[in-house]
Length: 92
Image (cartoon, rainbow, N blue to C red; front, side, top):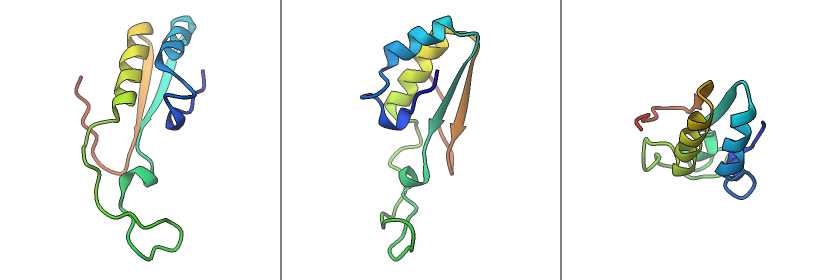
């Protein structure tokens, strides 16, 4: 299963992903933040829009947490790859 979680939940609701994970030998989830989410941009950067500041929370986005919990419940052979430029709280 390949899903682009950046467009979620419109393009890839959690229920179909969990149903697909039930049928798979292995599920791999990539979750976290991109450079656009991090907010480390500053005014005057050549290639990125100005944003500035840090994230409001060290937790994953709620949709990512729900997706991980649903897929892991559906398939015990689940690998979660976390991408980020800083800490992510992983308690559930």
